[in-house]
Length: 263
Image 1 (cartoon, rainbow, N blue to C red):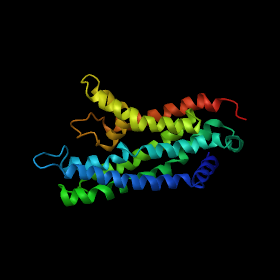
Image 2: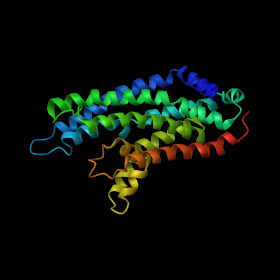
Image 3: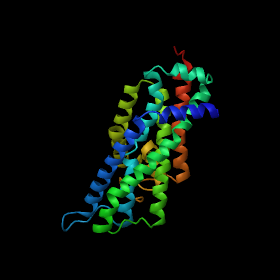
Image 4: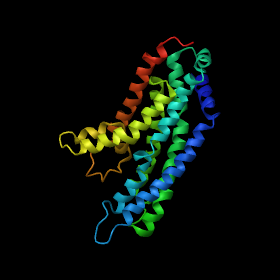
């Protein structure tokens, strides 16, 4: 297992795509963080910002999940789908014939990159949003224990997204299809679902069980509103939901894609 894990990690870091995506993620989240912070502190005279104080800071820093989770998902999915696109899956399985061990090694190998992506993403949201919140708002709250905890959990969330990306890439092995589904779900389907469910009292709680809702719960904040206005799960439950999604995709992928003959 150790040899397979090391081989998969080396394979991942030997490509340029992961750090290129991190650079794009960095620039994107700096811009979005600044734009969101500006929208919260620069409001028309006579109106009040929808989020103020610590809520504004937590919502801004939670953007690493709110809009940034597409990047670790893509990085993770590429780690697996590239094997099928470039036909290297055959050689990989010759090195590690046990397909379950191969999949576990693939899932675990992306964790360090996911943690790096989490640090980059959180640093970007802070760099973009904190100066405006400190200068024109009620403060950046970077010394607040709840805010710091949210930043740290945000790093963990991004790593979990990367693992989920590998699992999803195992289930949907076509690279183009996997990326299209990820983009459609993260940028359109889930945000619309979460907003729609939140408008129905009987279904509002279900939004927290969607992947992005569970990730917001683990962070402890949501860009969609304050903790009181958005249903959030306890952190332990949110972690179980996210791990459950990743495990579910991985098991389905193992029973379908990785069960077939590969030539």
